Amino acid sequence: MDAMILFGLDVPIWLIFLIGILVLIVAWKIIKFAIKVLLIAVVIFIIIMGLDFINFFSWIQNIF
Image: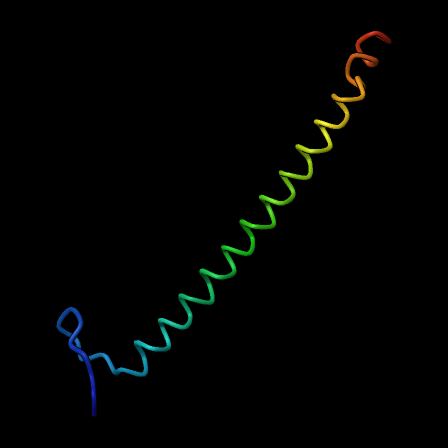
């Protein structure tokens, strides 16, 4: 049977491929989450810039 010696243990090739696939799946989920957070931050930033452009915050300061 084909196996690799890893840290003194015989690890089957199929197990290495399985671990590699699992690592790729987890990494992809983390990347998708980071992209969603980035898009939400960009949208919030654009909304704040738009409110500042129409002097919304100055208007609120003048009320108080």
